[in-house]
Structure formats: C-alpha cells, structure tokens
Amino acid sequence: MGRTLRAVMILLLVASCGGGRYSAPRDLDNACNIVKERPKYLKAFKRAERRYGVEPAVMMAMIHQESKFIGNAKTPHRYALGIIPLGRQSSAYGYSQALEGTWEDYKKDSGRRRAKRDDIDDAADFMGWYMRLTKEKLGISMNDTRNQYLAYHDGHTGYARGTYKSKSWLMAIADKVAARAHTYRAQLRNCSRR
Image (tube, rainbow, N blue to C red):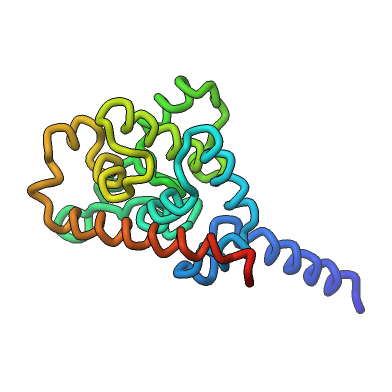
C-alpha cells in the first residue's frame, strides 16, 4: 500500500471517530439503551441527583424535549421575507438549551466558571441547579416534572405570572415531558434486571 493511500486511510479513520461527539443516542425511547450507549450520561445525572435531589428520569425527559440529547443543539434561524437571515430565535444552546444569561448566572453561582453547555456533566448540573432554584422560588417539588418543565421553559418570573396558562401547546408538551419521565423512571428501575 502506498504511503499516500495509507495516510488518507488513517485520516479518514480519525475523522470518523471524532464526528459523533454531539450526536444523539440511537434509541431515545428507552432510558436503559440511552445510558448503556452513553454511560457518561448516567454518571452525570447521578452526580446531579446527589447534589440537588432531582431524579435522573426527570432530567432525561427534559433534555429529550429540549435537545433530543444533541450536545450542540441550537434554536432555528429566523428569516425576514423568508430569505434574509436575522439570527437565531434565542441564545439557547446545548443539551439543556440553557440561555446565555441564565448560563452565566449558573457559572457564577455554582463556581463552575469553565462549564460548557455542550458538556453533559455541566448540562445535568445546570438543570439540577435551576430546578433547585425553582423549588426555592416557586415551591415546585424537584420531581414534579410537569411544573418544573413549565418553569424551565417560561422562566421563574413567567411561571409565577402564569404565562404558560395561555399556551395550550406548552401545557401539552409539559404533559408529554412528565409522561416520558414516568416511562424513563420505570425503565431505569429495570435496567439492571436485563
């Protein structure tokens, strides 16, 4: 085999190994398959559970809704007249779709100055931190997935004002997130029995 061909093959092999860093797990409907394929996820969720008291199933269901477990997920672009780019719909980014300003607050408050929104450990810790604040400010149980999600989506002030009540589409999504958390919870209980 020629030297050039060998170099091209090595380059292709290396490129194929690094390309999936942000891709979603294959089976998003089964929590056991998700954590089997990505054991780092379960470790991150368990750490956040120990630190903040939120169940992994709740975080997993919310991440499923926010980013479908795609680490570098971004909101869609907006266009004027269908062709003139106006930028993204918001600064939401990463697994948790955390907004830039809220992420900065998290980094200051948690002391995790190097935290990145596209890192599952940091995203899980952020969600635990935010949900703990939700409990403190709004009295919503850490494992009340539906209301935690509504407060996560509309923010603490928006939730307190009841902005979600006029958004039937959001309330339907919150119900789906709660149902997914229930499913994930049952699946995670049975993972070790497989």
